[in-house]
Amino acid sequence: MDKEHIVHSYDTELNQLQNMIAEMGGLAEMQLARAVAALVKYDADAANDIVEKDRRIDELEDAIDDLAVRLIAKRQPMAGDLRTIITGLKVSSNLERIGDYAKNIAKRTVTISSATGLRGPISTIARMAALVQSMIKNVLDAYIAHDADKADDVRARDQEVDQIHSGLFRELLTYMMEDPRNITPCTHLLFIAKNIERVGDHVTSVAEQIHYMVHGELPLGERPKQDLSSFTLVEPK
Image 1 (cartoon, rainbow, N blue to C red):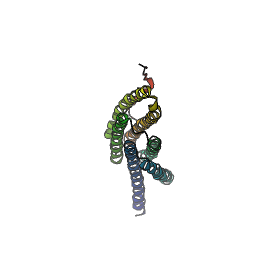
Image 2: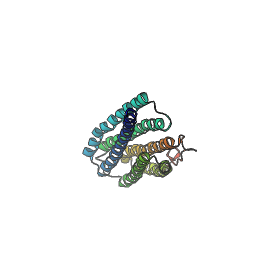
Image 3: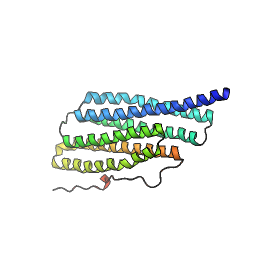
Image 4: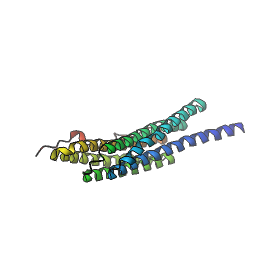
């Protein structure tokens, strides 16, 4: 009976770890969505609120770290259980960074909230963010279901994010060259776009960790990348 109790308690703690990560991921996804909505509306008040709400994500990461360490110390997990706990630690770290990027987008939105032009690039940023949000949702579903195939699909979609970012990088440089008054807001938009592209990278990292959790090894082959912004040149007319 005692052994059954121990096994049940262990399963409860593993489920708790999974639920905390799911909550953290949901918050990170919501923070990104709200940050981009504030940008689209030039809503400085909403952006400031997003900055404040980042604390809950940080608190969850700390709680997940504590639980994972206790599980390893007390239960001495092996094989699949150990991979599940290690994956939880790595996933929570990636989700915390996603929350940080959402907070940074909100901060920059406050800075440029009075510059109400540049609707075209902002619309592209919103489209890129929507793609990344769907990737977050799908990768969280893959984590809960231990579905490596779904995680691999998310990993492949990061190329789309890279392609949008490369085109947006060129577009924003053109706006800056055409009118010096665009330099400040476009610079902030470049950073915002890069933040979203980096969120895509962190989601991809989560997908790779899910593959490892299920199969005991990382996906074969290099991660597909299509971000050409580092090589982009826009010549003056």
